[in-house]
Length: 588
Image (cartoon, rainbow, N blue to C red; front, top):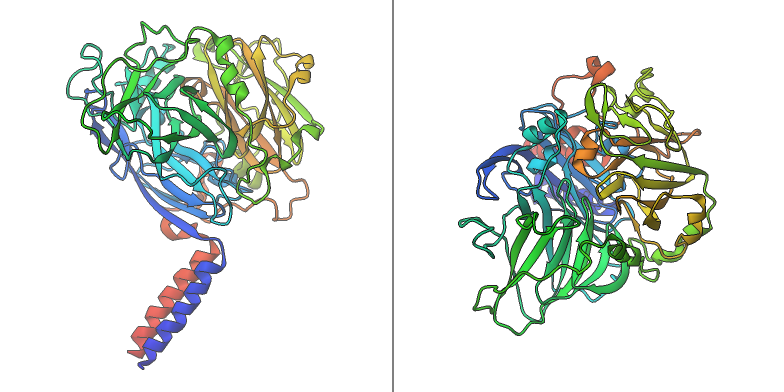
């Protein structure tokens, strides 16, 4: 046997041990660019990933290391964020301005993070400059490890459905409207998987629009993952003549219950099991329509796709399936989110029941009441606020400023409750306690239903009601089987109470998920630092960290992004590959 052949098998054995001894890596290359598309029949500029709108799915499994190499081919800065993905000890990869310097045009940046102890349905999107209004989003699926049973029979297939409101004006025009004090106005439509509505109505839907058609086989059951990737509109989702069995939301299995229609608010994700049990040889409507609005005025803000049975011979017909009768009754509509409970007997990412963590018995260490109000004029510009503070992102990201002793980049003085003072713009951050147990009251005194999101964590949704929260409302909290999630709705004139265990060090964004409110300043950050940090509780800044603001002089020329952030294991892999070929050529 030739010496180089023997050497090849030695290296192969080394590489095999390397690749399978530790947690696997999954790799993705994302080229983010503009393309022209006409989802509502009007040509417009949208943001695509690898030429596709929406972007491709990221598919990983519990404990996988996810590596996404991003090439920014836009004409403006870019960051991708991964809401709901709990990057343990690693807010450096979160992809929002308080934690990361932006990726300049024509630059690469490689994200690497581990999805520890997580399963479920999520999505990613660009976090800067209102870009999500033009696309750049895609699904993020985290699968159970094979040894962990799922709490339902294995589905026959997996279907991803991205729903969201859509404007024919691109993100630069929409943000210009907001900058000038204008409201976004009514959307031009709703997209399903980046496509416009099926022509169910010849008056409301023009001819020639491409629509989504999802093919299924009769008798089979599919896991349908639905994400509201829109910017400001709550949507009701339904499938004509089909029942949807709710099984999971944002990483947690739920008590299973059937729904004919389901409200999905901005930024939220759900999984349903849908059995194709209809005997009629026709297609069926899939509908996503605007919720809690004047139905007659907003009728055109409806997305319609087609569920196509493989043996179907006739198109879908008849009127669209009705939404719940309580469309104008918020009190009744709150019954749905209150009914969503965690399945305490199901395993999540680990082989122990999700309900084994007794959150209701933990003493609260800090309480924050975050009040949101309608936009107000601050220094001549319309802004939104939490507790009277309209957040302005720091020039130097918070944790980077800490590690390089940049003074004055931010303030650790965010108020614990609304203060009776003139609203102001500021970079005010929550000084959160490491390993504390925080209670956050999301008090929505705005005029519209909103969603709120916490990066880096899931939280327990323990209470929800109308009116202003008072301490006596704690007696109504669900302290046993509240759902855990990362994005929750708060009805106008109401409140939602959440609890979170702050065991994930770093700097984590807390924000309105409605893009207009977020863009105008309704956000803050939680700075969570271990006072005894010894390198075990927080990762150091990655090798390819970007510098900006007061540290911009530290930024070198475009780094070799494809290798610089892949960590020691992949560097060893790369070194072995180079060594293998060098040895082969020497022996040859």
